[in-house]
Amino acid sequence: ATYKPSNNPKMMNFSIALVTLLLPSAVSAQRQLRTERGKPSVDEKRPQPDKLTSVVERPQPDKFTSTIDFDVDVKPIKPPIGFLRPTQRPTRKIDIFRKPTQSPTPACESTCDTDEDCPPICEKQNPYAPGTCVYPGPTSSPTIAAITTDAPTTCLCASPGIVPDECELDILIDMMEMDVALNHNLFGQWTRAAFHDAGTFNQNSTPTEGGANGCLMNFPPMRLEPENNFLNDPLNHLEAIKNNWHSHPDTCIDVSSADMLQFAMFFVVVRQSNLIEPLNLGTPNVIAKRNLLKTGFAWGRPDETQCDTMWVDNLPGFSPPNDGNIAGPNGRCAAAGGEIKTKMMDRNGFTAEEATVLIGAHTIGLVRNTFGSGSFAGPWVSDGADNATPDGPVFNNKYHDFLINTIVANDASQFAAPSPGIVPFTMQFGDWFRDVPNDLDHLDTDIALAFPSENLGMHPDFSVHSAAFAGNNAFFLSKFMAAMDKMGKLGVSDALQPANAPCSCSSRRRLQEDNGFGKSFISLNDALALARDLGNATSWALMQNL
Image (tube, rainbow, N blue to C red; front, top):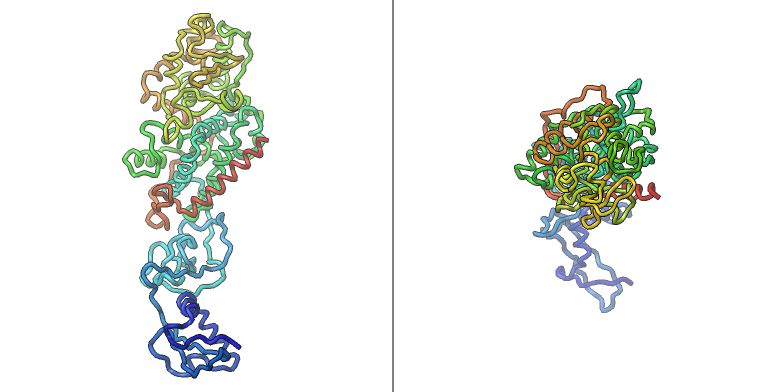
C-alpha cells in the first residue's frame, strides 16, 4: 500500500513543484520513462488546464491503500524576486595553467556558463541557460547551446611573447600588489634578490660571467649559498606569481625569470617611494605609479642555462680580511670599503656614486639570517621596518641620513675611540654593529659609507656621496633609479624594450572587478588560485630551510 495524499490542489506534494521549478529536465525524463513502460505520458492523457499543476480526482477509500497520479504541465516559470535558480554547470576538469590565446578568434567560440569558462566573454541571453564564448565583444544574438559534459574548446597560446603588453602588466601589478599587501617582508627581500642575481656579474672575466640572468630563481644550488640562504620564501612567491601570470586567460607571454627579478625590485621602489598607497586605488598618485611601472621598465632579458654558484663571489662579502681594528689603513672600515670597490666597482662596473646609492637599498627591509633570527634581525633604519607604515616600509634617503647625521663620529678613528665611540650603537661584533634600544643593525660595509677613506689605495671616499644623498631625497631617488636600471642590465647583451603599447584592454574579459582586495584586473577566482600557490610557496620555503 502507498500513501495517498489529499487531491486538493492546494495540498499537492511540494517536492514535485520544487523539482518542476528547478529541474524541468527531471519531469521530461519521467515522461520518457513512463512512455517506455507502455503507460501513456501525462500529456497524452488529456489537455491540461493552464496551471502549473493539477490533480486528477478519484473517489478516496477510507484507508490509504491506493495510489495517486500527478499530472504536471511544465511551463516556463519566472523565479520570484530574490530567488535565483541554480545553474547546471558542465562537468569537467579545469586546468588553471592552460594558455588561451591572447586574441581568440570566432573559431574558438564554445559553450560557457560564466566568464571563467572563456578566454574572452561569456555572452548569455538567458541567465538560466548556457551561453557562448564570444570575441571581441557581445554578439547581437548569441547562440544558446545545450549543456554538455565536454570541456569547452580552448584556443592555445601559440606564440607567447617575451615582452608583455600594458594590459598584461596590469594583471602582473595586481598579482604582486595582492602578495605584498599581506607580506610586507617581500619589499626588502625582493630588492635583495634582484641585486643578488645581477650582482654576480664580472666584467673582467673572459667571457663575462653572471649578471641579471635569472639564475637565482632557476638554479636551486644558488639558493644554498650563504649570501642567498634567506631568499627561498620571496623567490618562491615570485615564481608562483610568474606561473599564475603566465597561465592567466588574458595573457600570452613567456617572460624570463631574469625579467621577473628585476621588475620586482622596480615594483618595490616605485610603490614604496614618495606617497605610499596600495596600487589598486584610483588616486592620481596611484595612476601615475602604475603608468610608470608599465612604461619605465625594459623587458627581454634571457635566462642563463649554464649557471655557476661560483659567481656569488662577485657579491660584496660580509667579513673581508682585516687586522681586527675598526680604524686604520687595514682595519674593518677600510677592508669593507675595499670590498665595495673590488666587487661593485671593479667587477660590476659601477662608479663610486652608483655603488653608494645602490647600497642605499638597505633603507628598507631587515638584516635577516645574517646575524641570526629573532631580536637580532632588525632593520637598518626605523622607516625601513616591514610594518613601518600600514602599507609597508618607506623607500627614501633615511639610510644615508642615518650614516651622516645619526652616527656621531665624523671619521673611523673617532668611531673607534672611547668617545664619541660607536654611538648610537650599543653593541659591536666582528663585522657588524647593533643599536639595541632602537633595534637597528649595520654591517661594516654600511659604516664604510659613513666616513672618509683611511686608505685611498683601497677604496675612494664614499662618504661624500652619502652626504649628498642624505641632504636631498629627490636627488637620492633619481640617482637610485638610474643606477638600478644599469644594474638590471648587467651581463645582458640582448636588446631590451618597454612593454608593448597600445593594447586593447577593452577586449579583455575582466577589467577592474571588485575581488575583495579593491578594484583589480584579476578576478576573485584568480586571487584564490594565487593565494593557494603563495601559501604553498611559503610552506615549501620552510621545508627547504629545514
